[in-house]
Length: 374
Ligand SMILES: Nc1ncnc2c1ncn2[C@@H]1O[C@H](COP(=O)(O)OP(=O)(O)O)[C@@H](O)[C@H]1O
Ligand SMILES: [Mg+2]
Image 1 (cartoon, helix red, strand yellow):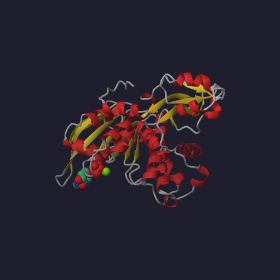
Image 2 (cartoon, helix red, strand yellow; image 1 turned 30 degrees about the vertical axis):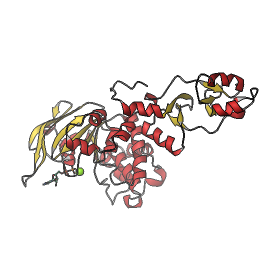
Image 3 (spheres, protein in one colour; image 1 turned 45 degrees about the horizontal axis):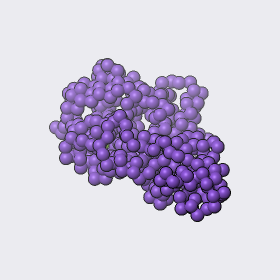
Image 4 (cartoon, rainbow, N blue to C red; image 1 turned 180 degrees about the vertical axis):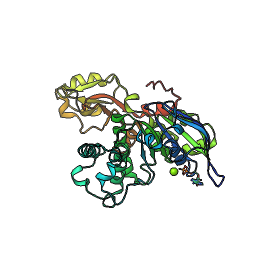
């Protein structure tokens, strides 16, 4: 989809900001460019949509050398979210978003329809935000408008330059989560710039790490965590390696699936037989497979044999959605002081459990991209 071949940018003052960069980005791929300030990230992005032309090398989009394309035509195929959002202050939200559709002379009704659709897509209420000016919005809202504007003409490619960089940590995390969902729906080819490794790990199919204008390593997040190419990458990845690893793995890929459960109406007598096989705690479900609580061995031993599980069980039980990361699972286990978490799917049905040994297995041994054995 996008191919950079030995791309170099030397500015008029002789400074080489991008130095012989070669990178191929597949259709639908999410590639993150990361590196310290001044390493050439923004310059690289600007060369992809021809705001800057390379001094040497070529950039191809769908096989065509972009130096042969009209820059205006090119930019219509590329949504660009710039580093400082870059909304035009004298234009309303609606006018900002409709900027490119207007230049393309879309009929007015179609422009307005698209603006509303985009505002909904990025989680803003069209009614209250359409006529506002950028200064009347919070940082997070401005950022959403910036994303909406970049998506306006539904370009196949998105270039996003530190789009969440200026937000406070809570808003940033919220925007990141929403953006992951949005990307699952719109499926763009994305080049995303950040200087935040956690953000890179959250999004990237591949991460290209830049140092002084050169790509020092370009690989999957896992490969970068496991096999940093050199000390620069190792330092950049940071020391909380273990937590970062946990953030890459989904609960459903590490959980224990074949677990015994008991029903609300089961008798304690039957449950004791199950505890005799060595369990200390068992998840309680109802007829629909919904998680209702858990029962401890000591409680089952103390109760009378004729009692029902529903009378002896402990509620609530700590649960986690199966598409969350192991880092979130760990955090929840610590916060709730829970020995394990019941894992639930989209329908809130029990699909497994996560125990601390699942976490240990993941960080304690090398594992392959193909999956994790629990
Ligand atoms: N027009 C320019 N002339 C000279 N140097 C520039 C120009 N634009 C950027 N630079 C320098 O090029 C380097 C890379 O800049 P940039 O790509 O913006 O870095 P990043 O986005 O990674 O922080 C920086 O050292 C910057 O000062
Ligand atoms: Mg930059």
